Length: 313
Image (cartoon, rainbow, N blue to C red; front, side, top):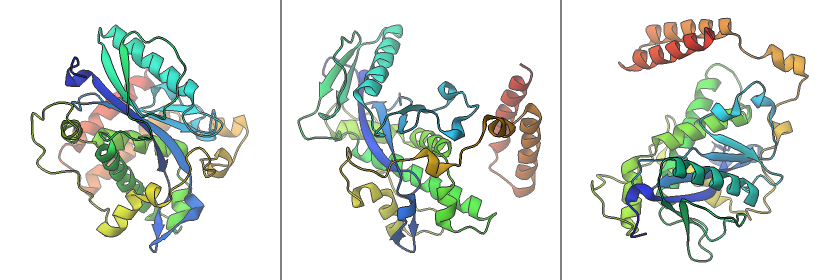
């Protein structure tokens, strides 16, 4: 790794995520014990977080109807067992190699010893494997913890906001969340992981020197209504419910997530341009009436401009 600058040293790892499991009265809700698999990849300076890959068991879930998958902030792939297969990882690796070639870069990619891929020649990526039996990179431990903290915080916030408008229990509300909801929360959580924390983790592992010392390590801030002890448990549920990754049976199942429907019924649920413009007006009015952060309207204007542009196409 000495021949590579921090921006060109990457690490990636496959992690399981109980994407809708919550704690109810300090007990685990087994009803929502559904797992998705996520591939996270980042460089050692924290300046480049690759788009996460989420793997489920179904090629086209019902919630994807009408959605342009390739324009989403997360890549979705499917496999029969819900884990990243050699073919899925090889496809991702080829795309990564091709992109580095377009940027005229040569990079190193640190991998766990258990990641399998098809044997082919890479032109711009050098693979560096961790010692045997090391399934997760030591560089990624704190980074994954931070990512999961942001995800679970957002999960509880989303459930609380939905429950405030319904009389459903927490478990029922969580169970209504779709794969598409989870993918957007994955993207938002990954975006929130601090580049300084990433740089600190690699520096601690001796990959490079830390230019800006981290003032404080990642901290777990519990959502409203949850104490720190319970939130720590929620973040680490994947460890608490240890399982054989290749034999686990509680994967996301399309039929459990949403009931199916005919093509005509699904078409009726697609939002029109008029729906989008009306929703913008409702959202702006809600901000006006409820008070918001001072920069929220600028973000809203950017969103409004993009919606109006798309409506004119």
